Length: 124
Image (cartoon, rainbow, N blue to C red; front, side, top):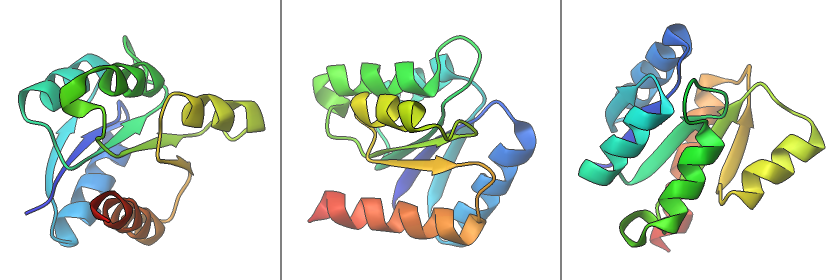
């Protein structure tokens, strides 16, 4: 089963994403901050990480950069979730190594489609 790590400090969003991804057949680990996300990815590397940009402690951008810097997780597909939709914010996200950038609010169906698309590109 494909493993996905979800990190978002907003419990409602985290639970919605968890529910939708599990319903789509994914094995999901959900955490509420960047440090926990980094620890989870190091301990049991997922097939994809879905990271909120603005979290306490380490941001999703920080986590993405850290994952890219480590050999074991350098190729891990990363999707950033954020309310920040300015062009500069998107550039920072992709510059940190993100594979996709999803702006909140988002359609849960679209999010699942994007996860599936990034995973299929990563396996190609």
